[in-house]
Image (cartoon, rainbow, N blue to C red; front, top):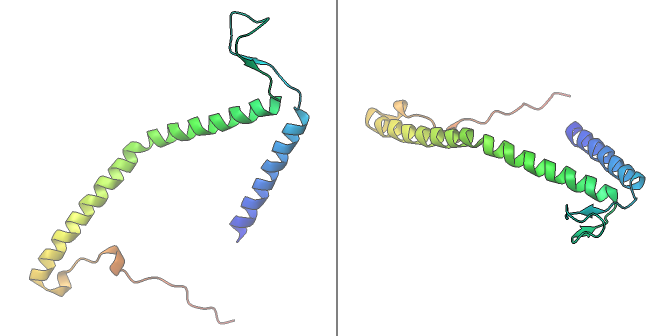
Length: 122
């Protein structure tokens, strides 16, 4: 519950900051993609400054997220490999347990008892 409240407060503060940014930077700026003719560029547009700031922020978040995702690929690959190996070992152990008896059977994660918090005596 507290996590939801904190998340809501942070999102509201970010929204207020974005509105203040947009209100303070409404002037238009000319963005030109023609480095050779500054007087009459072939491709230019004039958006409000806050658009450029927000677009740069969004692009930065996307590039950073992609870079982090790519750097974590070896850990995801390793986790998948280890999970497959664990499944194989459990299957082998359970096959041996069938020969040795039910006491030798290896428990799978689904067989584990669920831990619950007892109700308080209030």
